Image 1 (cartoon, rainbow, N blue to C red):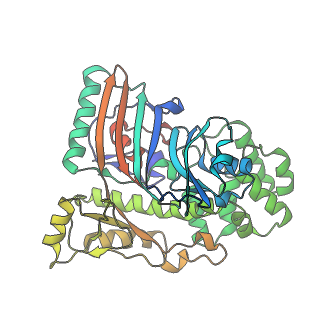
Image 2: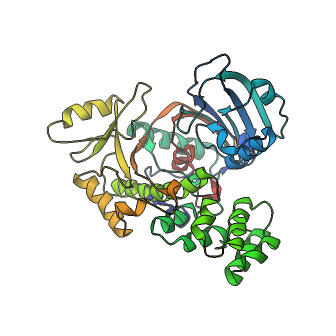
Length: 433
């Protein structure tokens, strides 16, 4: 175990599991350096179905903007486009999406750095979570180690993670924002009922990693608090900020309404990011106490695997003295996963030492279950769930060429490639990922 840097600690990533020297290096020098192919769960083909399923390959597209552009080009509402999971922006990504239009109309689209292929008709569309996992091919460039030192570092880290049977399943920086890691802070103020602070954290609140027009605009709004004037100087690229500011220029005291003016998936992301921050802290504390991630303890809650070998997040089974031998066998066979809480109105808390960790961090944050029922923003309410502590890696390979490393591997849905790679790179800043 090693402590991480200050920037990572702000999103709950307080340590590394491995104690090997970091290779350093740069991720995503170009979008082609970070390639993601979704391992999809295909809706059945149905001739004459009202929905078209197609594979969408996008280069350097943020997910919300991709959906908005597709919806605009098709003349439909963005909420009518279905997808299984949010992908990285600075990347080349390939995933299934669903559209309420005929295949011929979909294939007529010609959009910059977006390719649509393999359309077929179906009865039902795609919803969040309708995938098995993702395959990654990631090139790390300009490592600070070279030669034998680089090879030794990668091999040693791989050996430690192989012994563990995976990697700590932290939520990665993409969950929070690299340039502006404030998504969880917005969520915190939402669940605490301070909608004005939530809004101002998002639209104003300039941070050191920002540059140019956006930083100046945020600083000016923070000082002047004039939303009508802000519409004249906020850059057009700051789409979601402008949406909220526009609402407040017409309804100065309706901060909840400003948040509600955002796409529903973005609204949900705020509270989910706060839950993720708490989970990261809990996982760090378990590692810090020397408690195993690959072996259950009495009081833990395990998640049984489904037919695809994926954890069933809402089916937690408490570990007791009576069942621990059986559960330990299931965990060792990959048929169950030790979990941590994503705290919400109905989430199951662990007992034993893990329960102590979970309750301690919830208490430190001054939270109750009722906080996650948000009457003013229905989309932001969350019943909570549990998440596996250990991410499993399949088909892991790497190649080293001078100061570059190319990693390829597959992860279950919901697991972050950057949470695996940070154990190798051990970079200091969030923007390094």
